[in-house]
Image (cartoon, rainbow, N blue to C red; front, side, top):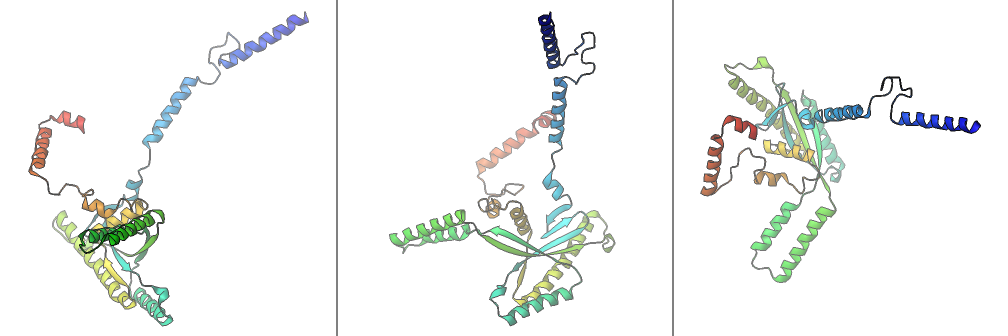
Length: 299
């Protein structure tokens, strides 16, 4: 009798364990999935849906960073609130090699300039990897164009150039660029124009004139402290931003090479052969002959 009771208890335990593993009600007359947890398939669908939403809401970093920038042209950064920024590159002076009197003279010049202005310029320092690829290219050209170098001199030059290339790749060093940033905001009531195009043109001219006045004033004052300031052109602003966001690869993929190869150009302006031009024209004509519905599918 005790053996039968023990076997019944074991069978009951196995039955309960079996029902729990199948997520089914223990009592057979209860409705299936009545009070238990939802099926596994529903959980998988919900997780998949959440994952898809997370991918669609991926942040747009550059769009958010430059959402206030309207244009970069005319050597200025134009913002949406009619503010303009002009940047001047400052040539440094070796301050710590100066004597005490020379250091005090530099300090007085800088303090006098700050006391004379009623606006707040900003200083920006950018550390870049030293790029000696251009001097290396000049050395290679001079070696190739020289006719009076013997084999020993050429061998020495090649080994020295190779050492410089290895030094740049294996032991990167930094160079600090110094900039002065001037910002001016144009008020809408300061300009009268008959058309939006005229208003935009006058606004750009007025902003550039004011910012250049500030740059020239700083240049005239700081020259007394042996600091030279030069206007950073539109291409220089792009290069500054390129080094800001591509700090490490800017040495291998130089901004200068991108400009020379027209990688940042909207249209290809390099000299092309007549055959290449004819092929491009034929491709354009073929594309224009395609119906609009097919163009929409292609794009």
